Length: 219
Image 1: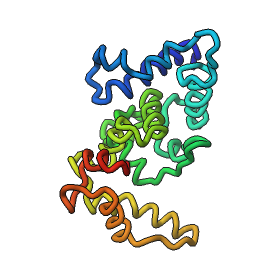
Image 2: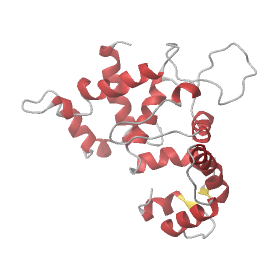
Image 3: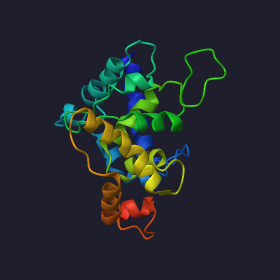
Image 4: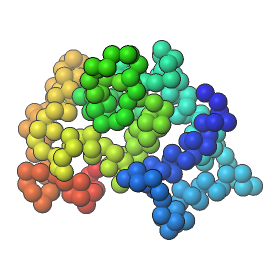
């Protein structure tokens, strides 16, 4: 990948992730000019500003995301498979471990690219491109932002307007298995569900909406 090509692409996609979260294809001028993200972009090249601390600089954004993408792309086909994404462990600041259920939901929801010529391959069996990976990393690194919450919401809610016991059970099963494989006793799923609902305090006691999650500050 050419650094000269990737740098402006990264800058555009970050602006779009935060300022056009619904992917409408346009960013309102008022939102753009009042955004701290634009201010950070305009600081590039200003005298006295440290480029390595600016997300939009090549030293920062390219040094982390582009290098990470290339490291994960083991077969060097320019795309990431589920197996390759499984090796994503986050950053030093926010280490993570992705579960199989979570990765399945990512690939169910995103636009993927087929690497085989089989027309009968099911949805979710393709591979992730660089732009989609960038959005994923931005969401992972900004989980508590509204944009990050919206990104994960469509993964966790299975396309519904709410989270319920089924969704919590679905994702927590893998966590229980991982803990069990490491001889660690896991909490009961029912207890975890009750604790989540107690923290969020949704308006409907059986369902958590995105607004409930944002309002609670527990995202």
